[in-house]
Amino acid sequence: MYPQQLLAPIKSFLNCETPDEWVEEAIKPENFSMILLDHLICELKASQSAMYLIRKYAVDKESGDALLEWLKPFELYVYKREGNWRDLASKNRLTKSVIPKSDSPYGQELIDKMVLLIKEELHHFYQVLEMMDHYGVEYKSITPSRYAKGMLKHVKTHEPDTLIDKLICGAYIEARSCERFAKLAPHVDKRLGDFYISLLRSEARHYQDYLELAQSISPEDITAKVEHFGKVEAELILSPDNDFKFHSGIPAK
Ligand SMILES: [Fe+2]
Ligand SMILES: [Fe+2]
Image (cartoon, rainbow, N blue to C red; front, side):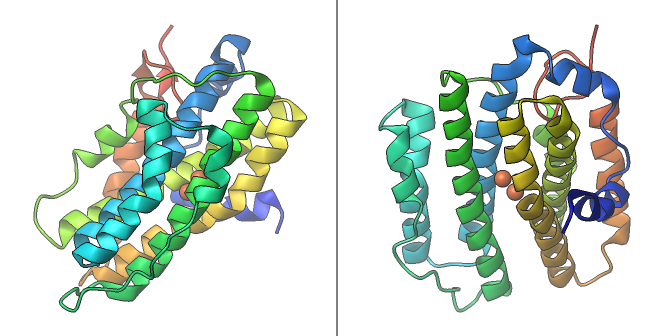
């Protein structure tokens, strides 16, 4: 499938396109490292939040612990600077099968979709490290942008709405990432642009997975909720933002 076909449903899902001002800022040489570093952290965050959802809603402690073990070398690299990044490629594996706990109303569908998603996000994480190595970008810690937090503060505090809302936020984050990779691809070095295009397919599927899970868990139609988060997301993308990041708003002059 060509990028344009992958992008069509994403563009109609998102309430706004990424403004040109953000693209112009993102392709400035001085922001090159920030985009890669923030992308790296976004891949880890994506796997962490998917893992959190499985552990909270779907599995017993033993399976939860096996999941945490899977993520550990990646987290140690980012938070403690421990280990050699090249070794992470061989560490992207889950050593035990993850089984739903008997009283989980969500069960296997959530586990299967999220385990595959985590695997892919950790692979992307490794691929971003390869890009950083290629372009000579050193890893350093950066502060999170306002974007995810700005959406998550609208998440309801009672179940099952909390889970449904978080899944919808996940769908928007994936869809926006996909749209931004496509926006950046024509303006960057070919190797990086090809990498961005290679990410479109899985990120487009991730957004669908999150939405399908949200609808299958919800006792009601989720359209109104999706529209609500769509407006919140677009507001974060279209309002001025001093902190330039991968998911930031319009760069404040
Ligand atoms: Fe990813
Ligand atoms: Fe993703």
